[in-house]
Amino acid sequence: MAKRIPADFHMHTHHSGDSEAPMEMMIEKAIERKVPEICITEHMDFDYPVNEHDTAGIFEVNTDEYMAETVILKEKYKDRITVNFGIELGLQPHLVERNSEYAKSYPFDFIIGSNHLCNGKDPYYMSFYEERSEKEAFTEFFESTLENIKLFDDFDVLGHLDYIVRYAPNLNKSYKYKDYSDVLDEILKTLISKGKGLDINTKSIYSEPSLGDPNPSREIISRYKELGGEILTFGSDAHKPEHVALGFETAVHIVKSCHFKYYATFSQRKASFHKL
Image (cartoon, rainbow, N blue to C red; front, side, top):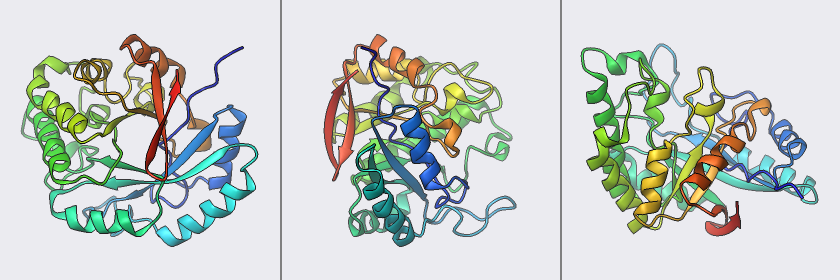
């Protein structure tokens, strides 16, 4: 009997400012692809900077509307798929208290903590890399991630740890774990000490050009295991129905090659483990 694909615990719908996907279409696609369980994780990035591309509040979900639709569809599809209510929180040092209050204000099943901004700038944009080396930009991103996870506790997994390599001028061509091992090891040790996991994010596998690795890279996944880490969730980071659970076969192969035998899902902020 063929193994079922893992649960997809990172996806966005029309409630996120960067997606127009109807929630019901995301659920239907997950069912079509025989995904056993999903968690929708809309964006909540308080104080995201306004620029020529992004309007004020673009990444701040209307949580009441989002929760209301999730409750309706969770019930509608309960005999076909498990639908969980999650959030992707944008981490910034000055938002620790605000994010903590928000996380406790709703009955989330699962919270991803993601480092989207470094000192108010998003590595998605080329301006982040101007007038400095790629290594300097990567180092700032990882140091910012470490600062955020030391300050903030109310999340379950760290989102797409090396997200920056998706958008860097040379992508991951010159990116190697060993060049940043000091700060990356500190990030992983901090996560493990706090009982936090990694989001195995497949967007960098199925996007063009494909990076060949998920975020984080297989070297980081392997190192997390060596240091004693056990908690992994899989996430497509889909913003469209056609991207739900894409890249999972490759990601599972990579994770298993790093000696993981189980992956996690979350309900009411508690982990359950499933054989890969």
